[in-house]
Image (cartoon, rainbow, N blue to C red; front, top):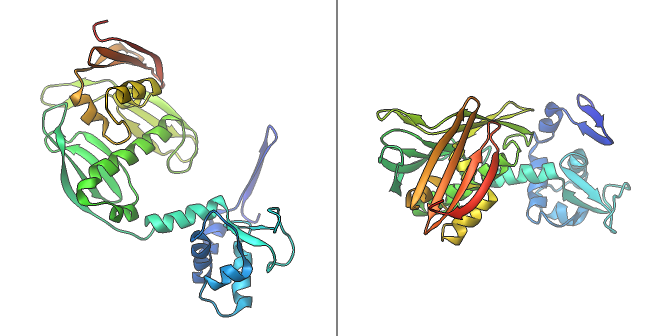
Length: 312
């Protein structure tokens, strides 16, 4: 492809179109409307006439020209039997490619078009570091769980177009669910920006001073786009499958609550520093006579995880 790149590795072939070419394809109202039309039923292919009916363009030749420009990048042509159809563009059906689905999804999510702000909302629990009031707010396309006293918390992206799907009082849980989604993807090693591979490092142990307490910190860096994402080591341990099973059995929904809210309701919660060089720590969750102990390693992975009685 002009301006693009290709690579082959161990039988894997990847061709990349240049960003300039890809975005140029979207700089046309008719093409955007074609994607919207396919996005109305994203899981099924549409014939030429049916798709044309969904787009406000009277001239079928003009419509066909713009549709052909999208084929191969954001639109895929399929035959009546489900296979590829390389015949005239007015035959066969059309469906969104993965890239096309992402563009349509971004339209619905308001990724490129919506602006929103939410004034601070009390979330009903206190900061574990200083006892201050925890609140959640939304600005600059980011949700932020933070302490109004010590300013510690978690800030993360949230699609602005999704805000109108929830009432104001529902936002803390909605943000918590999205945070769980983002953290799970991150801990599995995928960048939330470009889907590249992430490398982790345990960069800060818990501690600080009484006047300036600090949480632990693990950092993940994308090999491709250099995006850096951070989280507490305790969050990493919380989202481990063994820990999630423990929380679920004791009535905590990990996916619907911010981790610090659950930690504050446990019978015991503590982090023990095992090593300062390199950083290594043990996170302990205890409730109703049972406990989970998880070791967070220097490379921001969870090593040994054990369930035991709370007294052990």
